[in-house]
Amino acid sequence: MPEYTMTTKYLSLQHAMSQGTGKVSVRGWVHRERGSNKLKFIVLRDASSTIQCVFERQNFEKSWEEIDHLQIETSLELTGEIKKDARAPTGYEIAVQSYQLIGPSENYPLTKDQSIEFLADNRHLWLRSRKMTAILKIRSTIFAAIDDYFTKEGFYEYHSPIFQAVQCEGGSELFSVDYFGKKDVFLSQSWQLYAEPAIFALEKIYTIAPSFRAEKSKTSRHLTEYWHAEMEMAWSTFEDIMDHGEQLIKHVVKKVLETNAEELKLLERDVKKLEPVVKKPFVRMTYTEALKILKDKCKMKVEWGKDLRTIEEEKLTHLYDVPIICTRYPKKVKAFYMMEDPKNSEVVLGCDFLAPEGNGEIIGGSQREHDLEKIKNRLREQGEDPAQYGFYLDTRRYGSVPHGGFGLGVERLVKWICGLESIKDAIAFPRTMERYKP
Ligand code: 4AD
Image 1 (cartoon, protein in one colour):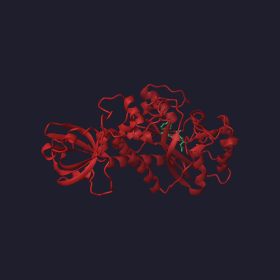
Image 2 (image 1 turned 90 degrees about the vertical axis):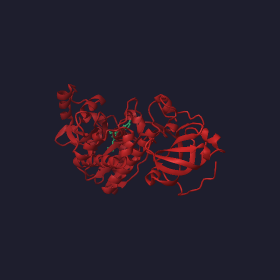
Image 3 (image 1 turned 45 degrees about the vertical axis):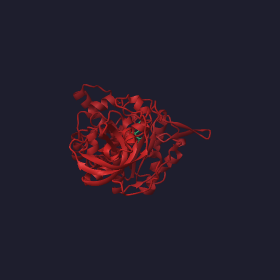
Image 4 (image 1 turned 135 degrees about the vertical axis):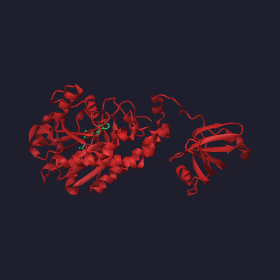
């Protein structure tokens, strides 16, 4: 390999095309290639775009053999004259004057029309596809937008441990870890129980961190490892929690529409379906109202007290062009920490945000129960020993305040915004019940 030095000589393909004429130096990988005895056409790809480059044999007699054999994914640096060309795939073409082969590539295993399994086995290579590149760019915008939303709203970034000794969202979905022979250690399902103690110091906090769920479900919206954007806030009302969730999603969707028009187009995402999310208020309804709507409009009968299943969430979300904030679920289907509704002790001040187009739950949040005795009873009812939660219960012993928070599954948000069939394409290396390699 030739010596590689940091240099500003090279333009990104997008910059080169915006320059439009004259001499440019660019670098990237061979995305496509075809040739004849006299000409070799390659489509060069970099992070920003693709461009057609033409080698004329008469200018490269000595190296023609090498050029003729340039294969998919070979890395190159080249210099040439750029000009508009309506026939070229991205409207520009570079007439190559000199080049340097950086890394050869032979018999690249990915070709057209390969099975989903083959692409998953070769995920490390499939990341280079235009589709995955577009998704990963949108994902990057989403992470940055979440950070700016919370920073602008005065939240501190705060980090909780990933090795945890308590369960937050149900014991059956915990991954246990062999921690030097100790078995009561789990991978985090949520930062929440370690975030609540910190609101007494920082009041408004957020994080984006991995969460782990030993989900046995093989669905298009479950991963075993996902990125979880969570917030927790002291002195909040239930309305504050829902308002932040709504404003956060509006902010993220707006940022993606402003930043990633090109990527959304490449993914053939109908942006008209995202525009109402920015402009219109979200639909708010209680669980009990949701059951009535399901019965009247979708002819689906759900017994009061049963949690909404994926199919029911799907049907509901097809009725609206903005997310639904569904509130006040039956106490027995929700986590122990959710606050009882002061007006109806059968339900909790919890909310799920259901994304349109059949996407379903993307946020789960609640006002927290801040009464020590009530929370101990809820733990016992759910088969937990309050003694294991000593550190957590101290948050209710020393200056407890009304508070609440939510968790947003970032891959679910990416899946919805990008219009993906499966959550697996919302992350570079998806982890599911069946796949943990490569
Ligand atoms: O509703 P969940 O379980 O809520 C909590 O974990 C709360 N402790 C959050 C909080 O209040 N701080 O999970 C929150 C979100 C879900 O709405 C969903 O978007 C995502 O996490 N999620 C998953 N995403 C991908 N794969 C899975 N297996 C997921 N499980 C939950």
